[in-house]
Image 1 (cartoon, rainbow, N blue to C red):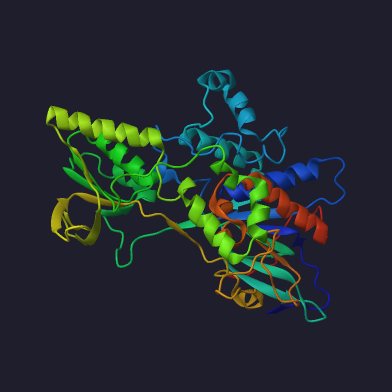
Image 2: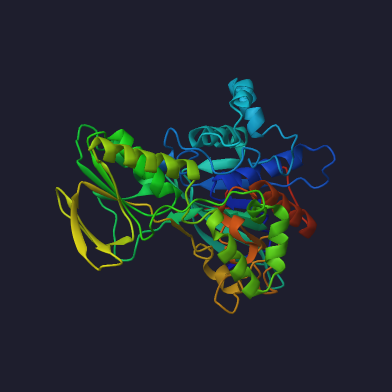
Length: 447
């Protein structure tokens, strides 16, 4: 551990944010609004570090006609502060499209439009973030009494390593693309998170067959996009069901995303938590918007009528093996009912197989040893999204994501982002921040 030496007077931030995706952009906005509130008695000093060169959120899936699955009212601020200048409606006003959007009569914007909104909002708090800065470690700092009062955050950039000190950290590093066990990404084996960039790399090529693996929204969007983008190619969808299952976005089911549902889920016994996830997993996991399902079926049937079948659905099947060659991919598909195997020679195999949360303790080094776990080995998280720690660690380590086991299905979704960052800010204030108006500076050059 780092030991504070007599005479040390390092710059100490109230909060350092690791990552600058939508959740931590919302966090920065909440802090910015708090600090500009004339009634605020405790200004909060904060800075965020993001390894990407600029803001980016699932860029590989910004298909031109794909829409959001959440209402525009569940933006970065509205549920917390409906009068915020950072709202999606204010963004539309600034872009000159507010009236056009209203006339559109749609709660669900294009995904590419919502990404532009995120970029617009991120730029408005751009003084609070440093891009091309990767957090590589967090080290506890002992005070004179032997307790951990601060955390030193080591950041790597093109200029080398620097260390910044904070009383609290908030981790918002997002999700990691998930591939089936034993399958590696390659030139012809993709994860859907990189779809658009990879497709651009095919410029001039004339692929004859794609195989798309998965049964969720992203898989269906991939199938529709590739079928449209490559009008001479066959697109084969492989999934273990009879067909895509529709997402349950009915009014009552959507209550699982309400802010109040987080309180109920957090307080529920473990067996009730499991039942709630089983009941309502079909609001988000391995499900597809019904309009897209209908469009794909209509297209498939039309091709059957015309005798020009390019859209194939290999249902009740699974991809048993994939072997990448220099000029093709051998995809072995097994029928789950008969056990029969068929080998498809494809130009590209796309895995739309979801994401997994990043281990929140991976960056914490020695501090991870002070974080408590439950009986199943999962990180214990308090209601305010702070990791439960041993008494000797007084710093707050907050999570934006990776809390599904404690806070429910909204952990990695946008639905509760605005409320969550407000609760984290309230927790910081309640625990007592000691902000300074000085500009943050690195503690040391660790290069």
